[in-house]
Length: 145
Image 1 (cartoon, rainbow, N blue to C red):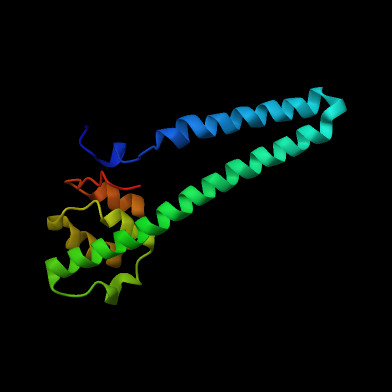
Image 2 (image 1 turned 60 degrees about the vertical axis):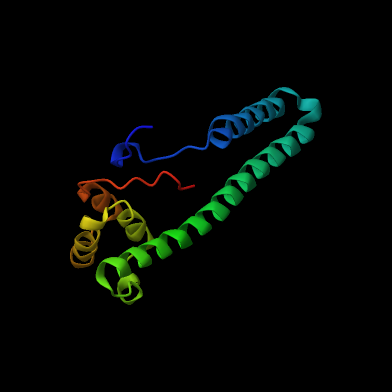
């Protein structure tokens, strides 16, 4: 496995990204083509198109919603624990000053950079992307959803 860093930290789920969604795209193409070419069954093709769109949309939203909700809670808990272990103070007192995206970006910082980068984020209002780019020794997160 490659060493994780800013340039390669995006993760794909092959069954969804490379099988299910292409199949949904193909079905959508076929059903729209059916609407245009098969005028005798136009309403049937419209229904197939709507069903395909709704199926694709719902599967995307459900997959994202469940996984991201769980991951967001775990990331917050992980950061609270790390912050407490490093500073003997609770993160909750300053956590509400940061967006979740900023907190999520901070999880890639190793312990020796974490507290200073957190303080810098609070004082300078760093964006999540700027936080990730400021990390010198990337801490991989290979178990995320």
